[in-house]
Length: 598
Image: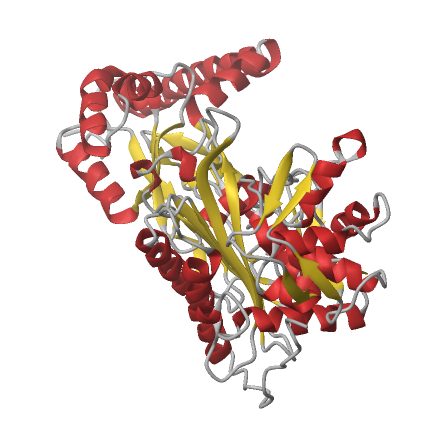
């Protein structure tokens, strides 16, 4: 019996089985080579034949450029307490590649939830060729997250959030007339300052936004995709000279004073006599910077700088101090003051009827005699009084840093007639703004040296490139120290209950120097004196070592009101508060008794 060897089979059978896997492997390699050649050909086409088309398509479909907002600098008071600050906020952004299909419904949803304009929102959601569109800026973070989460629950895709600091004004109306506010950001996402320091120092406060570019996929950032970031440079803080608590108090006292006198409006200024720094600058009426839309845009300013008026008898301080400096009079100069002074076309009179009085120059100021002031001013050489008033700062902007400041009106040349000169001597036929006049009176408090008023600590740059602040103030001597001291002695008699017209301006325990003012107002319709008045009081204390200068103005109080009866008590309240707050002790000396009559 023959045997078949183990493993033997039909002829060629084993070889065929061995060959079959080899053929399969060869066929597989052939397929792989074919596929790779297709990829290679496509790569050559894209990179070698049309690389620009590829780059543009990638940019359009897969990269996003995002602005990284810079944190806006704070605006603070002198102690660092915030008047305007930026807190955490959020922007809501859309990817139009994902929102376009559902844009109408999503636009309705967002317009309702965020109080947005439907048409503008719809346009952003449908923006062609864009992967990044602002939908809402500076939204409180919790609200923004809720809106985006609710949108996702409704089935909408393509909304996301990013950090976007929110500007707040924590003190409401305190210094609103100075700080200003921001409106809705511009279409490019930049801040839109609408008033005050926010507007004038916008570039200084804004800083420089950063930028980020990254790749997106399915509405999300690709973790390992291209990602470049240019960090934002935050804005500078702006520290003001204001004292927040004193500012708050000044606004409340001013409001009570204006309303109590049935007045139209008012201004109060508190200055550091030695440095010219503005510690408080109040306007009434004013507005709430946290909710400005509820107020008239006419209030988005500081009328202490933008509005002009005739200063009235407060100006006599400047006239009489100039006479003393020029060597043309002394506080004891004797004058015979008639009840009327007939000059040019109209007689000049005093606010009270009287026969001829025998007044010293101090008495002329203490009793606020227009006639006596004009008689004394007759001693000036032509052009001499105007030169002094200009040196005091009248007719010139103070440059404290707020927009819209007027220079006032100080006639010159042919406009300064003898009639005009007479009336300017006692405070008519010229106009000032309140900061201008406060700085002029402060010149007497500062020993005859005028120092620029300042509202910014250190130095900061306005948008026009001008640097201003306490580091940039200038000083100039206007009258001698002797003349300033003599004027102080005369001003002290103004508040004397026996000799002066404003005992209500006294501050218990302190020597006070001051001056009342009552001026006629020019009506806007008739361009003539319309019967209304502006009343005021300006002064400083302690009189013999001045620390603060205060100026209070009330426009159009009820008939019969005067600077001593209306503005004097407000001055007393503000001065008393400032002296206590800064711990200024009385000098311990008694008020002077320089004679007012002879």
